[in-house]
Length: 125
Ligand SMILES: [Zn+2]
Image (cartoon, rainbow, N blue to C red; front, side):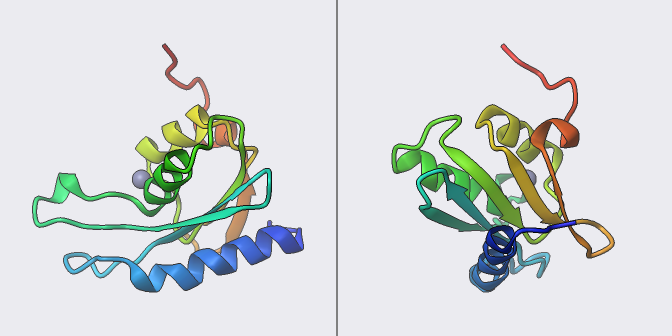
């Protein structure tokens, strides 16, 4: 259950940006919004490709934008996603050391969890 106004606002940003998803094959539009510890917000959408494995998830899109802007693991506080993050994205959330993941679970309920709760015993080098 999402309880803070800041997390609700972040989720609303994710919902709003989902309209820009490029999803002509699945019609499954996903939005993500990442909030850095300094308050800056980065948004992302899923971008599909005719060669299906080449598609990019919304949360990866938002996270790569934040990293491109100079943000490092630990600089990002929370991410909101309009869908449950896939296994690969869960690994990204652990790697970038976010505190909290707000997402719509498969029942459509907006919930919050830590990356470790979403991916226990994570692979590490
Ligand atoms: Zn993913």
